[in-house]
Structures are given as C-alpha cells and as structure tokens.
Image (tube, rainbow, N blue to C red; front, side, top):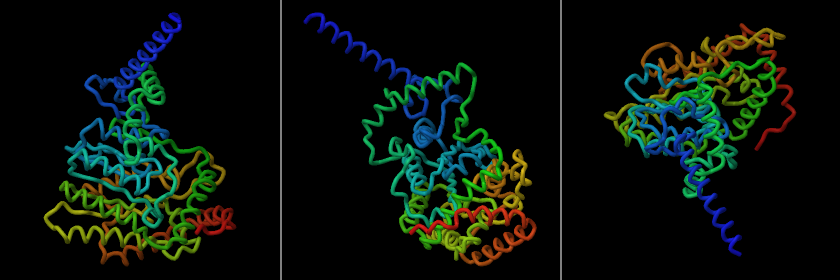
Length: 399
C-alpha cells in the first residue's frame, strides 16, 4: 500500500511538473501570440507561425499581443496581397488580419475582437465578390470555434489549451525548431504572408479547382439573387464601430481576374456585374457620411473590373511553368497589385474607382465595356473558360 501511495504521489508530482514545464514553455515561446506574459520572449517573434490549421487563433493573437493603430480585414486576398508596411500606413502600426477563406461573418468577429481592444485611426475592410449575397455558413470548418473570436466557446477551456495544451506545445516546439535553424515564419510579425508561390501548371489548376469554385459561387449568386440582410447588418456594425472610435474606414471591393468575372456572364447570372453589391456598399458609405460629415469618412473603392492589371492573358496551352502576370490564380493577386490598391487608399494611382450611389450605372457600364474588350482581344481565353465551365454545367443550381 505504501508503495502504491508513493507511486501515486510520484505520478502526480510528475504530472504537475509536466504541466508547469508546458506552461512555462508555451508562455515563453507564445507560438500563436495568444499568451503574452512578461517573460514571453521577443526573439521568437519572426518565427511564430500563422498557419492554416490555427489561422484564426494566430491572427487573433496578433491583436492580443500587440498595439495596432490600423488594421486590414478580409480573406486570403488580404493575407497575401496587402502589405501593412505600405506608405499608406506611414506613422501607423498596422496589422494584416486577413483570414484564409474568411468572409464577412468571421471578419466581423475579428473586427469586434480588435475594436474592443484598440483605438484605431484607420481600418481597411476588403469585401469579396458574392460575399454580401451569400447567407452566413451553417458550418465552419476552420479553427474559429477554438480561437478567441468565438463568443460561444468556453474561455476556461480555450485558455487551458493555449497555456498547457498539447497542440500549443507542438507549435512551441515547431517555433523553437525554426528559431534554431534561422527559418522565419511564412508570415511577418504584422500578419502579412511573406510570399505565395505561383502554382505549377496554373492553367490546369484554374480549369479545375478555381473554375469549379467559381461555378459554385455563380450558382449560389443566381439562386439567392439578393443581399444577405444578416451580412448587411454586420457591415453596418463595422461602420458604427469605426464611427464610435473616430476611425477612418476604407472598404475595398476586391479584384478578381477577368475570367472569374466573365464566368458569371457565361452562366447567365442576371447580376453578372455585381450591381447590387456595388450599390449597397456605395449607399452604406453615403448614408454614414451624410449622418455625420465631421467624422472621418467612409470610403468604398472598387477594384473588380477589367483594368489592365485584372486582364493579363493566360499562359500558352502546354506551358506548365507559365502563369498570369501578377495573379496566383483567378482569386489571389500578388502584392504588386495589392500595392496599387493601397496606393489608391493613399491618394495616388489610377487602379480602381471610388463608388458613389449616383455613379453606379456608369461604373457598371464601364466594367461591362472593359470585359467585352478583354474577351475580344483574347478569344482563346474565353474558349478556355467555356470549355472549363462546361465540365460543371450538368450540376443543378443549389437552392
């Protein structure tokens, strides 16, 4: 019996020691930046990960561990394309809080988490085509429920995971390994992805994964037809939050390559130029600005068009190493195009147009003419688009 008690005592002491050691290691390395303590080591900062598995957790960790005068919100288009060290943020400490596959519902949660902790001077919100017309998802397959963003999650369970959990411990060891090898994380300490490589055989990837995704998006856009009231309410809350903090809000209607845009027309979408989305954004900004002209303005910049930056031709058929100029695929522009977007925020450049309610008809007509011009100049690309979409045409429209 005494031996058993000694064993139990030894086991409990060993377990307690392991928990303490895990706590010390996790809070010292702080791999996702969610456990800032006085002893968290700054030397690990370039090596802390923002990977797909813990994307929401790590981006929320940026907010928890830092002080940010400005922040950018959106999907992977923001994560990949918008550099928080652009001159538009000169004098401001800016975080890139773009979430992989993150649409407005999650961006609203990230914004809420951010605005409760910071007093920003500038907020940039990127809205993707189809987001405002798509109902909030019923299932979230990301780490959202495990992150600080989910108000319904158990705070105690979450904090125990961050401080002593096996998943955090694995991230700590991985961070230690990168530190020893001198391999920086794939994201900067400001949350910006350092580089997103062009894929091999880009034409094949576009004709399969990306046009399949585009086809589903178009089906949903056609089926739902209008704007999501819930998402418009969330968007209004973001506007209100910025007004309460006296922060300038700039909304980007994000770009896609022309083939993505033409796909909606090819599939018979009655709103293939996204007039409803553009009008809703323009009217939202106009209403906010009219309500309080002394507050920092709400601006909407529209980059979804047939500008030359959005219309490079496909690489020749059979060229597996070629790629669209400055486009990783039909959805994700490189930081060079992101720079042009941020130049507009900074009052320079010619890429994109600022939306106003009265200017919507002319803007839509201009986009239509630009896409017509691209289709005329690149008939082989249009043929490629039609052949690719034909593979998915037999599928019924999702109601």
